[in-house]
Length: 143
Image (cartoon, rainbow, N blue to C red):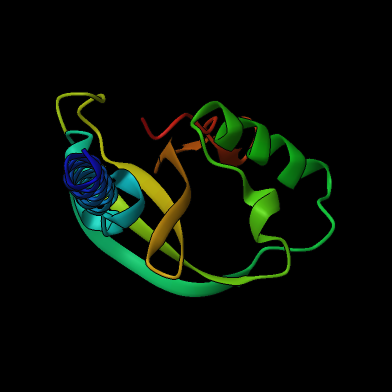
C-alpha cells in the first residue's frame, strides 16, 4: 500500500510539473507575439497601415505633466497605454508617413513612442495644417 501511494505521488507531481511547464511555455509564447514586443513598424503594419519613416529622435517623458501632456495621455489611456508609467524616462519617438485604406487618401503622420523596444504611446494626425488656426488637425487614436 505504501509503494502505491508513493507511485501515485510521483505521478501526480510529474503531472503538476508538466502542466506548470506547459502553462509557462504558452505564457512566454503569447508574450512574444503580443503588441508589447512588436517593433513600431510591425505594430503599425499590424493595424493595417502602410508606413514610411520620417524621423526618429530621443524624447523625455516629464515627471510632471502639463495640461497638454495630460490631454495627450488621456488619448493614450483610451488605447491601453499610460505615459505616467514612464515619467522621467528617455524614450524614442518615431514619426512615419501613413497611408492606407483605413484613412483618407492624403498622407497622415503617426507618432510612436518607444521605451526599451516597447511601444508605449502613439497618435495619428493629418500632415496638413488647419490654416485658420495654424495648428495640426486633431490627434486621433492610432488604433
